[in-house]
Length: 97
Image 1 (spheres, rainbow, N blue to C red):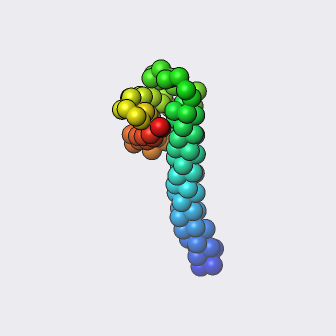
Image 2: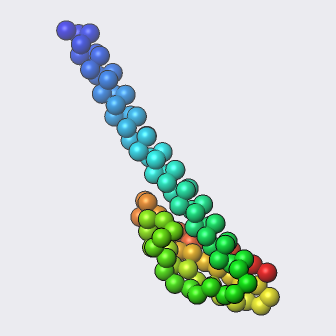
Image 3: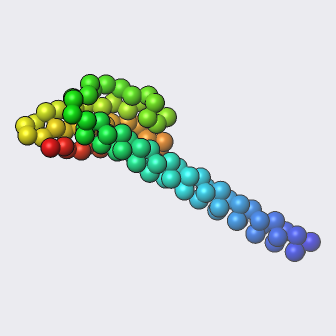
């Protein structure tokens, strides 16, 4: 009987430790993937010769990405703002020449 209780205790200890850890790792992985996609799309938008319109993009990631482009001669500044999977706002800005 004692062995069964000990085995159940060990099983649930591992279960309640690993499940939140795996969930946290998946969230962080998705956060990094979204950040990478937004950075790439922002870079592609900035390197085009014509000034792309600022606006909201829904097809980049699962959230709405607000893109703003400012002209600061001789540079162009592009910023993307969105809410990540942890519901925290994120902003990335890139400059082009």
